[in-house]
Length: 79
Image (tube, rainbow, N blue to C red):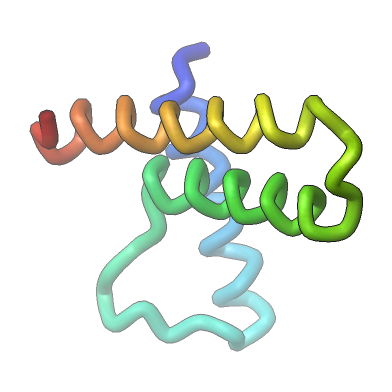
């Protein structure tokens, strides 16, 4: 599927998981595909912080950042 569809599904799953743990009170807001792409970018950046010599982490982080931008364009009309 598309990144937007996959990350939207992931957002719903993560939100449900966090609500189930009682860790999240989103006040009627919800996570979306942009949030998930940013979280994945943060994950890759944390891996870079721990291991600066693994080239794939840099590539993956930049890809997730670009995907976040693409999802934002589709969801919010951001150009």
